[in-house]
View (tube, rainbow, N blue to C red):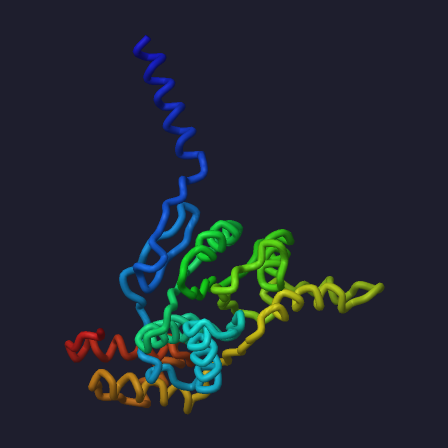
Length: 275
C-alpha cells in the first residue's frame, strides 16, 4: 500500500509540473514595470535604463520614440512601434529610457515586457490591462518566429490592426527585431512563377501594421566615438580613442553595446562604479 501511495504521489507531482502554470494577479498601478510570462505578471521595482542624454548616434529615432511614448503616457493618440535593425544600437534601451523619462514627467504609464514564449497569451494580458486605469507600453524584445509558424504572426497582425482581440485603447505595442520584415525571407520565395512578390509582401504585412517603424543602423566611426565621449564624460573616465577603435575592431562591430563594454573595461581599470 505504501509503495502504491508513493507511486501515485510521484505521478501527481509529474502531472502538476506538466500542467500550465496558474496565472498570478498583479496590481497594475503599483509598479513602474512588469514582466509577463507563462505564469502571469511579475512586478519590477525599477526600470533599468540609461539616461536619454547618453543614447547618442540615434537622434532621429530618439526624438520619434520619446515623443510617441510621452503622448501615450498622457492618454493621447499614439502609435504601435517597430524598432528594427543592427544589434546593439540601443533599440530596447531607448524604449526603456523613454518610459522612465515619461514616468519622471508625471505620466500615467507602465512598461510591460512580454517573454518571447508568452506571446500567445497576449489576449489574457490585454484583458487585464483593459481594466486598469493606466496606460501601458507592452514590449516584446528581439521578436522572431519559428520556421513554419504562421499562427502567431497572424494573431499579432490582428492585435495590431483592429481584430476581435485587438489591444485595448490604453495599450500600445513596441517590438524590437533585427529585421524589418520580422518573418524569415527565403530565396525560394523569390522564384514563385505566379507572383514572386506575394511571399515578400506577406512578410512585410506585419511590419506595416506598426504606425511607427524605425530603422537602426551600424554606427559610423564618428557616431561610435561620440557615444564613448558621452559615457566617458558622464562617468569621469579618461578615453583613449585609438584604443576604443581597436576594441571595436577586435569585436567586428561599432555599436552602442560595444561602446558600453569598453566603458565597463575603463571603469573597472579605474576602480570606478557604474551606476
